[in-house]
Length: 516
Image (cartoon, rainbow, N blue to C red; front, side, top):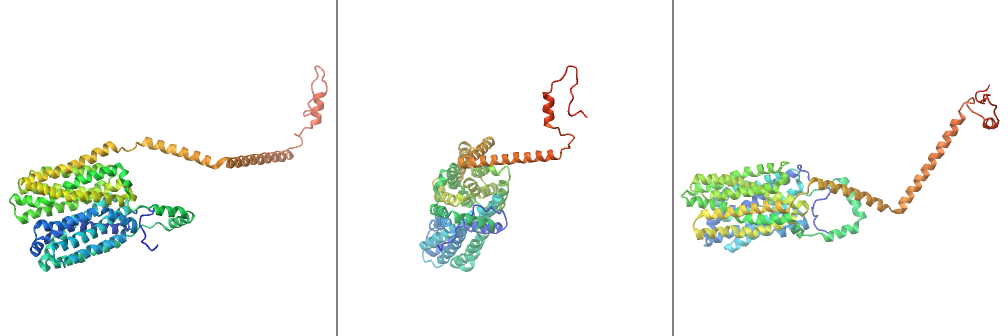
């Protein structure tokens, strides 16, 4: 009644795996880049904000923390809005919110105003774009979905390499207020990306069939609409989803710690600021190529059915890199650490949502991703501050990297072990038996559904057909008798008389057929 059309995806529509899906992938690439890179790009303006408002570094660091908290913590709200209004309108509104927050922040007079504008409003706008873009990507790609996820995830390192230098240039040319204003205009591109998210429409023939079925079953359709859930909590009944949520929450505790502390670690070893900052550039450059490559590998026939274990391997690789990197004593060893960490970090980024899509499916993904992001939001807020407190207590970066590595390795062990023990695929033989049983059940059900009246009618029809066949045979035999030659025909009276007359001994019986 005047509401937006919900693009939940018709059941008869198959994922095109191309076509307009590539435009959707391009929009998802840009949205992913803004969502993950923007909280880090804003940190370029922190020194100017400290001078402007007379606050400490920890106070300005809350801006990025609130941005990330809104991006992860508003997941259920995004799921409800997507299930109610659809992906495209939610993303359009989200783009306006993201831009409005940065524009309002350029007129701020206190750090609290920036918390509310940049942190809350812009963070909410980015969240309203990030989650629906992944949902649409899942609908448009099925066979090529691992590759699509890898390409879209590559938007994060690409945007980070572009937005951070851009922020420095804007700060130098226009100050932090002008920089915020220009970045707010840049975020309007989220509306353009939202416009690309065209809902999937079934073919015309399928539409006509659906309309006919809807006319015949109007009360059932109305009942289904009433039962539609804005947030499906039934995903918690799935063991695979529960295992994934627990493992992902543990992983996030330590996943983002090394990129935050690696520059400070290099400075602690006596390296220059520019040389230390180069480590993040190396990490991001490796990450750009690692994500699409991992997507290609995950799409292989042998790997895709085992993508959960491939994801656990990526987490194990990442955690092991942290543990080995904690023993770094010079700049060269940190460079090697950033290379391997960039590879493993890209693998995790390319696989985390692909695995979730494979576990819950397309229908429940919109609700599942919101609930997962909510759980991860708690870990995001706890992980880096906890590592910071450990650093304050020990004054040694080695323990920070050891803690992060142990958390990520633990998440990999939980995911792989629990899936191996509690989620076992059914063997093919059992599947074949089930199919045969269902086929026989269907046949018996059809026979029983016909009832005794239908069976009686079939018997009457069979009898009538038999009688018709016998009549036709009699007619054919009479016609053959008419065309038989007279020399061959025998009179029945002569045959009876021949059988009744007595015969003499030694005399030869005369056969009426042989006598002249």
